[in-house]
Amino acid sequence: MDFAIRIFFIIPIFGTYFTTAEDFGYDGSIGPTYWGERYQECRGKHQSPININVLRVKQVALPDITFIGFNDPIDNVHVTNNGHTVLIEVENEPHPRVSGGPLDGTYVFSQMHFHWGDNDTLGSEDKINHRSFPMELHMVFYKEEYNTVKEAVTHTDGLTVLAFFYELDRHQHPAYDDITSALSNVTDPHSSIVMNNPFSFLNILPYDLRRYFTYRGSLTTPPCSEVVIWLDFEQPVRLTHEQIEVFRELRSASGKIRHNFRPIQPIGDRTVFYNIDSNYYTYNEIDDPEAHTEWPQTRKRGNSASISRISLSYFTFMLILCNTLG
Image (cartoon, rainbow, N blue to C red; front, top):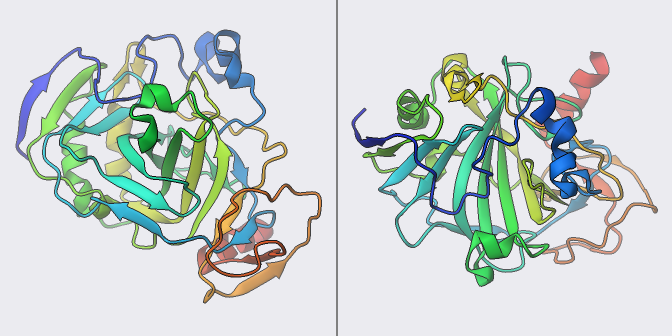
């Protein structure tokens, strides 16, 4: 693949919320257990990631999500190793946007990044029925009315993160060729490259963007601000082992980044909502009068005050079956 200028030892400038100093990590005295000593909000009650128990989610039918600019070819895509993960940022205006679903207003793309594990059995941050996926993509957006990420993180609805899980496949995903090729040029921390080939968000996402879990949570890295509306899409993206392994070759100041996921946090008094398509099979019913169900308040159809049925796709049903048999 052809790429433009390779730039070493720079700090990304397109709105990332990551701390640039090497003051946190995933092991030892700077690992997640100790984040709260320097960043008080990392000890908060509504932290991310969480384990999503599909038998405890609340079914909702939210308005459709509007994905603006996701199918447009984007030039000047910056790929940066910030010492904790790989960031993908765009320079072109206007940035892609999302609205609808549980979101009140329009959210503007800031950056996307990845979390992975030492091997293919773990790596995602959120889990489904305690199942970990080998990698997870976070697409970070800030609320348009707040103008910047810096201002958005001071508001409880300042950010939304679209999260996507990855599963293994025998066949390579061709839309990831440009990304994996770029990674080989940013193995050193704080190095960056600009991709020449136009890049489309929609090409790297799963087909089904209707079914997702949503909950209120936090950033999963310091300062762990509790300002995020999470949307965890149910259908995974499928990559080969070799495509995921390229991410594990990236380096921090202390060596290869073999894992960069935060352990799950207590769900506390929060409710996870499951956006469904009414055509899917209703598998189970639960009634939990003690669960907090005030958010989200906007529903497209159905009785928003009394919905308690859990509508599960084939994918989620198989997760339950595998956990039961295992």
